[in-house]
Length: 589
Ligand SMILES: Cc1cc2nc3c(=O)[nH]c(=O)nc-3n(C[C@H](O)[C@H](O)[C@H](O)COP(=O)(O)OP(=O)(O)OC[C@H]3O[C@@H](n4cnc5c(N)ncnc54)[C@H](O)[C@@H]3O)c2cc1C
Image (tube, rainbow, N blue to C red; front, side):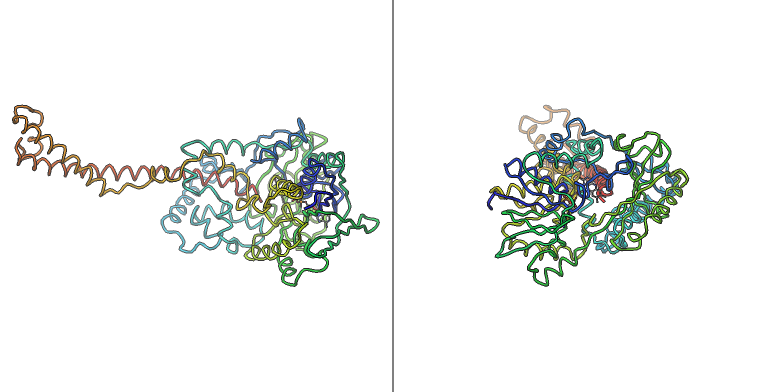
C-alpha cells in the first residue's frame, strides 16, 4: 500500500488509535465520525454537569504499548481506582468473586447446604450431555448455584434462555479451568499476581471521553483531521480497490478519495454501503450478523451516598435492570455536586424491541420503580434523569456468526486498500485496548508492515484471562504432567517389595559369606518378626518372602495415600482457579 493518504471511518478507540499511529508515521489522516462526539461506545456523555459512560469503562490492559499511550495522553489525569463491585441478589450484597464466608452468611445455612448438596450431585452424577450453557454450568457448579448466580444475569444480558446458549461460549468465557494453568498458578503464585491487577484499574478524571478528546486534539495538532457529524453513506470501489467514500456532513454530501481506507463502523453496515453491491450471499451474511443493544437510564439522586461500589451486578430476577453504575465512585469528578449521586441503570435489549422503543419518560419511571424496589430510596429522591440508547453494543456469537463473518471476510479480502478494525468493525468481543491495537496495526500495515489484525484477541475475549495465562512463569508442561501423574499402586508396591526383599536377602547372604551369624546380631533379631528366619541360605529366601510382602503392603499404601492427597490438592487448586476465572465472567458483558 502507498502511504500517501488515509481515511478512517469512526472516531472510537480503534479509529482514533489508527489516527494516532498515522501521525507517528508522518501521515495526516482524515477521520470521519457520524456522531457529534468522539469515543464511540467508550465515549462520555454529559448532562447538567453530570458525566457518565455507556456502561462503566475500566482501562485495563496487558499491552504495554497501549498502557504507555494512555499514560502519555492523560498523565496525572489518569486516576487509579481500587475496585469494588458486588452482586445484588435477594436484597443482599454478595462479594464478587464469591467468598465462602460472605456467601454462607447471606444465603443462610440451609440454602448453603442445599447448594453444596446440589454441587455434589452434579459432580458425582453429571448430566451426560453438555451442549448448552445451562448444562455446562450445572455440571461444574451444581444446579442450585447456577440458578442463584448464573441464570438470571446471563439471560438478562443475552435475552435468550441459557438452554439456547452454546456450551462452547461458556467454555471460552470461563477460562482458568486448565489444570496445568491452575497448578502453575498455585505453585508459582501467578494467580495472586493476576488477582491484584484485576482489583485495580485506571480511569480518566472526567470519564473515558476525556481520553478520546486528547486523541482527537493530538491528531488535529499533528496534521490530521477528525471531523464530527460526518456520516459515511456510501463506499465506492473499482477494480479491487476502494476508490472513494461518500459522506454527509449535516449540510451537504461530500466525497473523499485516498490510498488507504480503514473502517471501524459495524462490519455488517459497511457491507451494505459498498457500491457496486457485494454478491447476494455476502449481503445475506451481513444481514444475519446480530448485535445486542443497551440502554442506560441515568437517575440523579438527591443523596450523597447510595452504595460504595463502582457498579453492582443485579442478579435478582424481580427486576429487569442488569447492572447499576455509580459514577462518582469511579471518579468524584463525574458529578458536579458531592451531595448528589448519579446512578446508571443498565438495561440490555435488542434494537427496536419493546424496551428499546419505550418512550424516555416511561423508561425513567420504570427505572425509578426498580430503584425503589431494590431499596435504594423512593422515586421522590430522583431530581433529574437522562436516557441514552446504544445500538451495536455487543456482537452476538450465535450459532451462525462464524460462518457469516467468514463469508464477509473472504469478500473483503478482495479489496487491497481496505481494512476493518475494532469491535463492531470486526464483529469481535474486543475491549478498548484490543480495538486500539487493531487500529494501530492497520495503520502500520498502510506503511509497509504486515500484521494480521484477526490474531489480536483471538480466542481470548477478556484481557484478565489473557493476563492470568501470560503472567504465570512458563513451566514445561511435561514436567508438570510428570510431577502430578497418578502413581501406579501395583507397580510401585511390587518394586518397593522387591527392593526390600533383595536388601534383606543380600544382607543375609553377605553375613553368611563373612562367617555366619556371629557377625550380625541385629539381623538375627529379624527372627522375632519373620518366623522361621535364620542367617542361612534358606533363611535368606524366607527373609526375601517376608520383606517382599511387607514392602509390597507399605508401597501400596504409600502410593494410595499419595494419589489421594494429590487428588485433594489438585481439586482445591482447580476450584480456586475456577472461582478466580468466574470473576471475569460477569465483568465482560
Ligand atoms: C456496556 C459496555 C461496557 C464496556 N466496558 C468496557 C471496559 O470496561 N473496558 C474496556 O476496555 N472495554 C469496554 N467495553 C468495550 C468498548 O466499549 C469497545 O471495545 C470500544 O468502544 C470499541 O471501539 P471501536 O472504535 O472499535 O468501536 P466503537 O466504539 O463502536 O466506535 C465506532 C465509531 O464508528 C462510528 N460510526 C459508525 N458508523 C459510522 C458511519 N457510517 N460513518 C461514520 N462513523 C460511523 C460510531 O459513531 C463510533 O463512534 C464495553 C462495551 C460495552 C458495550
